[in-house]
Image (tube, rainbow, N blue to C red; front, top):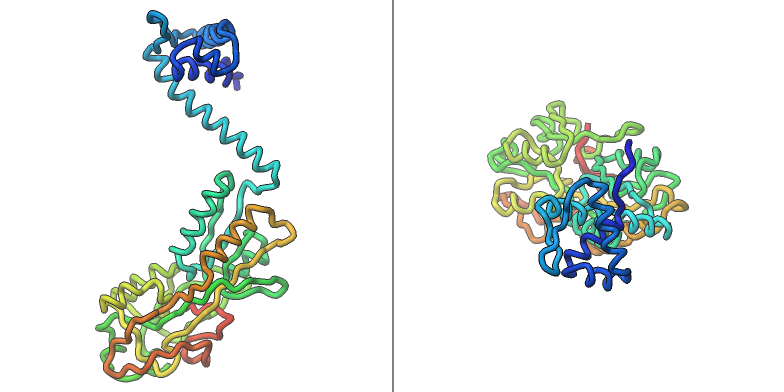
Length: 336
């Protein structure tokens, strides 16, 4: 690849001449002699074999080609400054990239708020974001494919800080057969209809969180798809309450009147995958995530249960496996 014929300094001189109104003004701004400014521009135009400036009275005026190349040179200078800023960041020990694996149940609004704040404070650090389901976050720890993990459990050998709890609710379309029964439902009732399950993205030790063992089951790879299928009346599912506020308020989804296990709460933890190797960028992102999620309990808030046989809403930390709600230290999410 041929070497460039021009230098950043030559382009900086051209910019100064135009921005400050002439050779003398540019020389003063750049703390150079006027002759060195003139020489730099002469060499630039000779290297390009193209006229960039014409003298109009006492002022230098750009040609059409000069105007085009001047704008491109500003982009070039901006990229050079970005490169130098990155070098300064790396000198200070900041990582150029942070890998973040997040359980898909973590509220997206909270995640985006945290990432926006991180981008402001560490603009030179890239973020590699992966969404996982159930044991997929365990795999990210075990295989060390991320720097930070937000997961529903802490694998043996790691420590985790509790971020928040997410409520999962058993829901179906208002016209679903389960709602038409007009009574409290049991696990046996659920076994007779189709459940929408979200596949565990983990490979090492996949789990069946929230599956009631129904023989009629459709499996999808994302919570969003599961929500769409339930809203279309294709089955029931346990879904994160923070994702279905609007549908509950509009009565396009209703909470199933289960005798037990209507609502469950699952914690989410923040885990440093390799704490001893976590630099300032990883720790900054962790601090921002902890602050953004602090005190949030993502759930139903004041949404009323809409059914004649409704009982007071009980938030469960755990119940028996037949209800489909798992204990508090496990993700509460259907899986296959």
